Length: 100
Image (cartoon, rainbow, N blue to C red):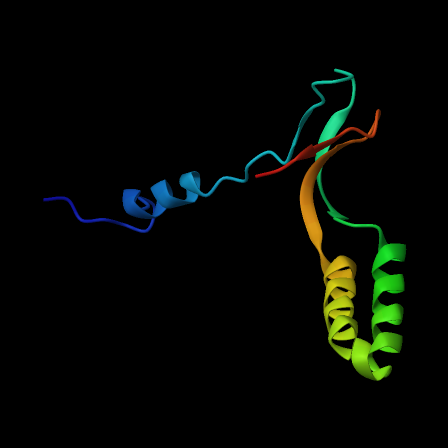
């Protein structure tokens, strides 16, 4: 049997490195066929609506009988402010396609 030397790397260590090759993060746009689609994270909802719901919810929270409605509105407003979604975004035509 032949001994392994330092010049002969083990085959077991070379194979996993090849499997961990980086995946391409961009592809061509299917709509304009000229742009490149890139990964992006955007807000799911209008931020103005989230702020308005949050502020109105805080006001309702301190108005006695509307307190329960205020709590619900505050949580919905916070959700609108925090919700994000992952999409593909074209750099030429600004097309947005959902990523799953």
